[in-house]
Image (cartoon, rainbow, N blue to C red; front, side):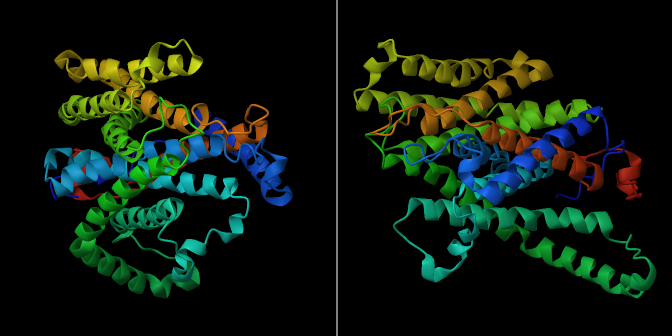
Amino acid sequence: MSSHVHAAPIRMPFFTRGTWVLVALMAVGFCFAVVRFTKGIGSVTNLDDQWPWGIWIAIDIACGVALAAGGFTTAALAHVFHREKFEPIVRPALITAMLGYTVVVIGLLADLGRYYNVWHPMVPSMWSGHSVLFEVGICVMFYLTVLYIEFLPMVTERFRGRVALPGALRPLNGFVEGLLRLFDRTLGRIMSVFIIAGVVLSCMHQSSLGALMVIAPYKMHPLWWSQVLPLLFLLSAFCVGPCMVIFESILASRAFGRRPEMEVLGPLSKILPVLLFFFISTKAMDLAVRGQLHHLADGSWQSVVFLVEMGFGFVLPFLMFFSARVRRSPRLLFTAATLVIFGVAMNRIDVFLIAFRPVYATKHYFPHVGELAITTGLIAFLIFAYRFVVLNFPVMHVEDAASRRGEEVPHA
């Protein structure tokens, strides 16, 4: 973080009525997770040989990865393209991405039938250069590691100069303090390498998620299947990244009683019409080149879903972001960003669930209550963990004198 940007933990109680609701949702999800890991995946899902994946892949994995794109997009803007005015929103975006990818990995463990083999991609002898899924897995693994490394400076800032181990551990205070100072100096010198690595890894696996479905042309509706699915997935990730930053920043401002950082979010939103234009035009050209435009008016329910996805999720916010009034209004800016998030999330669900149809399917898939409970629990955990991190570590940008002096802020 630049020297002119100051961050500090938020001063407020951790537990509220909303927090206890999150705890309840996590508890329900945890109970179903225990059943899943003790009695098998079939005990809490409606997955079978015909429907090998459901909402855990479509929502927990595909949507989770896409909606965590705010981390690499803001890091690229601030540190690769040197747009320092976006520096105040980098840390919140990175925390959202770190927790989002953590939830993705937990969801993946639940979805894998043999979850205990998840370590296989870490062994070079088990690598397969011909597997798109391997590329997704190894990139997610590396990127999650990079995100936790990018979180370390916030840890050193939080505890440096405040180490006070109790009792028998007190003689270690000096050692731990020196270790924190060493981490701080070392990370400051090499962090740019991890930032660039994070951007590259994100671009790779955002696109490769789309490549997963390129190999299933006869199992997908032609409105969504395309050989350029990797490009479409990457472009839509570029679109949703800044929107997630806007969405998270305005929600956090309201939740923590802060002023919306419109001096940063307004300029950030100016790039969105360009990004949305590239996605919409690429999608339209793809349909035209493949000769699939006639499906838009064939009256099928898939065509209706597609038009809702593109109309409300991409075209409408594309027009909204052109308006200076929208970019100046927190409420309208939040609405436009939410529409893009809706569009990208719906796109991932449509690609992996709505468009996907097994060749020999004899029944329809509908998620089991266990799948819904675990997914809801993971989302609740994401919000709960975000609140914990923001209230305990220097994530949010502040301008008060106390933060500049580095005064200690009580943690939750």
